[in-house]
Image 1 (cartoon, helix red, strand yellow):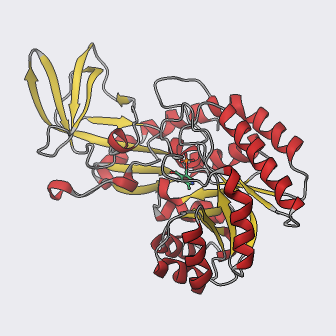
Image 2 (image 1 turned 135 degrees about the vertical axis):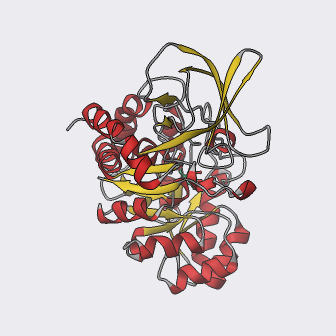
Amino acid sequence: MNTTAYWREIRKSFPKLAKKYGTPLFVVSKTLLLEQVARFRRLLPRVEPFYAVKANPNPHVLKVLAQAGLGFDVASAPEIEWVLAAGATPDKLVYANTMKRNESIEFACRHKVNLMTFDSEYELAKIARHAPGASVMVRIKVPNVGSIVELSLKFGADPADAVPLLLKAGRLGLKPVGVSFHVGSQCTHGDNYLEAFELCKIIVNEALLKKLPLEMLDIGGGFPIRHFDTDEDWFANMAPAIDMELRRLFDPGMRIIAEPGRALVGPACMLLTSVVGKSIRNNKHWYFLDDGVYGALSGIIFDHCKYQFEVLKKGPTQLTTLAGPTCDSLDIISGAEELPELDFGDLVYARSIGAYSLASATTFNGIPPAKPVLVP
Ligand SMILES: Cc1ncc(COP(=O)(O)O)c(C=O)c1O
């Protein structure tokens, strides 16, 4: 079944799912998740995907991806625990948070998670003390031009310091294996990757001159999806140039991994909410849903997301405001949706909501986050 046909079918099942599990309901589609994995592998065949757990650590998601043979990018001791519980083996993990608690480094070491990133001398000293002999990749600062979520503000060593840092890692008894970077999340500017590759190639060459052959390149996450205002398939457009440059610059002996989060899980999930309150303000319909920006729609705040809201009901549409269920005025989901008139209990749903949504949901006002459910 192609994706459009699948969507038609799953949409038809929404009332049944809502009735069975209640709303708000966070629907994880195994079919769509595996389709995203296949698409990533198709677009970048030389790159091994290590799913960035932070995007969505739901156990259903982790289990499906572990069964599909993916690696995982983890950012904390609990993420290590969750991924191992989902069936991944420690050699499939990269601890890719450059700022780690000492206890978490020890935890990783005890659980045989041996590959980590760092971007400062201070972190190197911590890793050397708490995970002696670990393999390390230096994370460098790279251009994040045009990415929705900028990540080089907070992370990344100056590229000029990369080789001295890797040499220092060796002197501390660690195994310096490679270079990593992140171009920023929802990166629609493919040149960010290409410029980062050039920087990495310079580092690889310089390291070789110092008798330090590097074996690994970690090209991070950032691969964009379609749900931000436009239907443009950014990832498909930029992938051929990324693939070509990787082949041109790095010989086949170089292991290349990536840490995609959004691109794998974003399109694989949907959120079903119900109308629980109504009012008319300034001649405009307001509908209060049973989920909002403190719940699975938290990406509106933290991830700068603009979701598209749809309903099953048909009829003449009008300009409508959607709000969440909490007592905070910040909890307004959208002030400009074209929707038909809705009743209590009517479903309002959003697609492509798998990334940075449930992961940052709270229980503010005592309202529990949407219930996750896996569908085939
Ligand atoms: C170190 C690291 N790797 C991977 C990711 C995933 O990025 P994305 O979801 O854009 O693919 C992030 C996101 O913040 C990150 O910080």
